[in-house]
Each structure stands twice: as structure tokens, then as C-alpha cells.
Length: 200
Ligand code: GAR
Image (cartoon, rainbow, N blue to C red):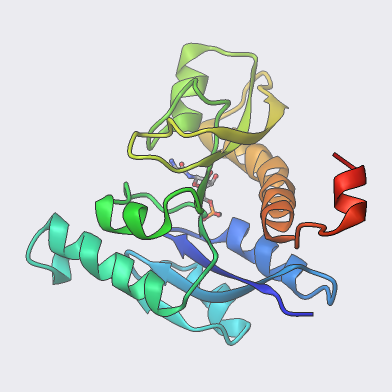
């Protein structure tokens, strides 16, 4: 079976990446992670190195300006010819070069129930607002900040005494299987022929 190539972008500890890699060890998994790219020396890159998957760091500070970094990031991703690009804790907005190369084929996971609490501090903002239920969302990436089409969501209760850290850990535990499920769905071959017509 040929697997759908996926590139994962990270900035942090990479627990979502680790879940994607664990699922890819299943011989029936429809995708393969072909590269992991970070915008910094993220500790999560270790998960990719341990799995002998190519890694690359494309740092903003190594480029003349944001536009040059955007172009370098798009070039790095394109070199691996992915069919799907997954932002798994990638803490920068992606610019026009990546969006025009992979429009509609970039997804992001976010630790809140969008459209509530977009941006870099989804967990902190939800806690500060006093919500009783928050969660995680997997969305299509568009030019806005967490404004793309919602593909899947999972709810997580906020508990008495939760800190940003305890709540984020519980969100991540729910977020990881959600992201894996969406990536598997998007990379599964679509049925063709009479069976497909019959199942419409
Ligand atoms: C995840 O919870 C992800 O939703 C969040 O960063 C965490 C990364 O964790 N992303 C954002 O906040 C994007 N706005 P990980 O590095 O352990 O996968």
C-alpha cells in the first residue's frame, strides 16, 4: 500500500507529533510522516529523529525578514512533496507562500473550542474567562488566525483548581487521538467505482 506523505510542523514538545508517529507504525496506517520541520530547536524534533524521519529547522532570525522566512519555510515543506501539511503546535502564522502552495491541504490543531479563544494562548484565555468546558479543535488553515473550517472538535471539562498546565495536559490527551483520527481520515484513499457511487 502506498502511503500519503505528510509533513508535520512543530515548535514545542511534540506530543501530538509523537501520537501521529505512533499511529504511523501501524502497517494499515494510510499516511507516512516524511519530514518534521520546526521554527526553532524544538524538543519535539527528538521524536522524529528517534523514528529516523528527516528534520529541518527554519528559524526566523536566520532570514532577512518575515517574507524571506515564509518563502524558506514553503520551500522546505515543498521539497518533501507532502499531500497534507499538519501544524501540530506550530506557534507561527504561516504566510502566503505556504498557503498558495498547499491551500486547503494544511490543517492545524488548537487547544480550545474555536471560534472561542483563538491565538497563542487558547488554554490560558479559556481559564481566565471562567468557562466550564473547553477542548481542542482541528481546523483547515486559512489566512486568518484560527478562522479556518472546523474539521473536528473534542470537549474537555475544566475542573476546580485547574491551572493552565493541568488543563492543557488533559486537553492534549484528548487532542492527540482527535488529530490522529482527522489525519487518517484525510489521507485515506477515497473509494472508487460502483461501491463509492452506492454509498453516496
Ligand atoms: C497543542 O496543545 C496545540 O494545540 C497547541 O500547542 C500544543 C502543542 O503541544 N497549539 C496552539 O496553541 C496553536 N495556537 P505539543 O508540542 O505537545 O504537540
